[in-house]
Image (cartoon, rainbow over all chains, first blue to last red; front, side, top):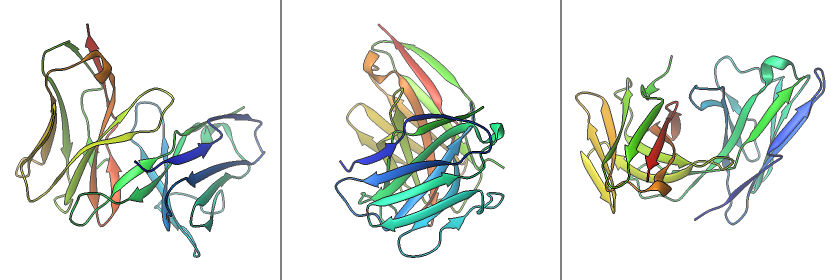
Length: 119
Length: 110
C-alpha cells in the first residue's frame, strides 16, 4: 500500500518556540493532505486540509496564523506550530488520500504521527 | 460536536472468540464508512470499508455491518487473534472529509 512518512515522531520544545512537522508521500503523489490532532482519549480532529499549490483550508476554530501549513510539492506538506504553548501539546498526524474501492471516496494513508510536548 | 462516536474505550476478548466493536454517527449525509487499526507508535492503517448503499461488507475474518436507520456500524472480528490487539478507529466520510471516533482499544487474550 501507499506509504506516508511523518517526521519527527516525538518533539519536546520550550514555550514560545516554533516546531515544524513534515509529512511526505513516498510512493505516490498527493495533491491533498489532511492534518489531524488528537488529545488523549479524544477523536482525531481534522485541523486543516493542505492543498498543493494553493492555500490550506482550516477547520473552524483552528488558528491559521498559529498552525502554518505549506504544501510545497506533490509529495510534501509541512505543519509549523508557531509560538507553541503547553496547550498545543498533542498528537499530530497527517494523512493523504490514495486510491480506494469506494465509489466516491478514497482511503486515507496515515503518517506515524508526531507527539508534541511543549514545556 | 463529535459526529462519530465510539462509546467503548476498551474491549477484552478471548482468543478464538468474536470481537464486536461499535460505532455511532449523527450525520445522515455520511456516505462512506471505514475502520482503521492502529498499533502503538504507528499511524492508523486501513482495515475495511463500507458504502452507505450496502449493509454488510466482509473481508476474511473482518465484517462491517451498517445500520443506516440506527446510524450505527459495527466491526466483527472472528475468530479473534492476539495479533488483532490494537486500537480500532471508525471513520465516516462526507465529500472526502473524514471524521473519526475516539477509538476502541481491543485486547485479545491468548
